Length: 451
Image 1 (cartoon, rainbow, N blue to C red):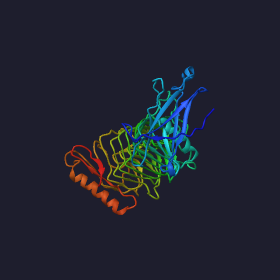
Image 2: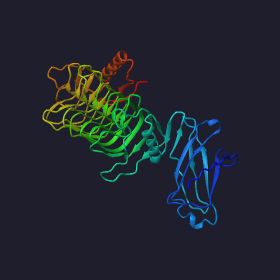
Image 3: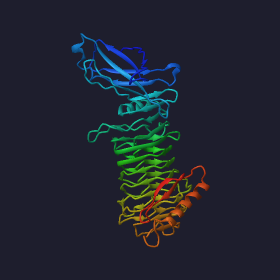
Image 4: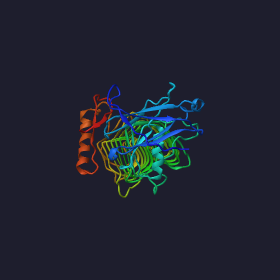
């Protein structure tokens, strides 16, 4: 039966382990098919707040009973490691008294005061996910890179957080500039599919890299999130994203702000509204976002955004975004754009280069179907002989880089960066803190922080 034991830790004051804390557990026998060690490490005055341990010792102890006539001692050390939060815990150096090797891994810690888990491996991520499904405002910080256990063909190794618009994630997920690799979701009949299914206005994700994902859904499908009204920043995705309608490399549907988000994923939709970064952008603002993977859909296919759907009130905007994606529309009347398939809001200092276009549909280098309310400023394209906009009467400031009279040089970058400054003066609540830079006038520019 489970046992509750209070363990005192003693601080080592001399030798190579000085500054560490140690405690010893003496076992006289184990029962059952599985053994685990779960507990809380608490501190005086509750500062820092207690940390959670959850460790599987089944493999380590599977032969213990055979020799239980002599006690077996497991020793552990608590290592103090200051970091940006002020304190981190690692439990290590667990081993049996006969010299065998057992390992104890700290999956996560929990700060009840901020409702925040800090996770270190897949198991810790799942512990947070279970807590988040019960309380959608539960925060998370990644403490290390995590590789998910591979899923069988046709199976998933992750269930999206947030079930629908009314049950959206409202916490904060900080990737800590670490990565999660191998996230696999195969839910071809489900709406809202990604690491997060739905994120509400109060929810946010930042500094997260998703590597080698394989994600399939039906509608609102993206690498980080299927459907979001919250903000994303510093997120990147690689792998493959597929579904029906509203499919994007980072987000399927976006109603918040995305900044410095990038997708190298191949994005495929069997219906409309497919984009390299976002499939359907409704009043969302994308700043310094980019895409490099292949993008394919039926119509409203864009290198950065597939579709912006508010023609009477163009609240959506694209600022300093670019794509080098190859694009494909499977319909003879497809609207396909190097930056956006169809867009009704401002498009400022954006470009498309390198990637190829199909030979059918309404295919244009910047916006496939440009609404009359859309204002295009200081945008550029190269490697395509067609027009900038799909509408015959559409106008805007878009220029082809032909490699002879117009280059990716200081003059071009100065115009793009000046347009960003103008945007910032007119939109102080949503500034773009990025600018273009290049060292080779034959090569498209990259984005760097403005300061």
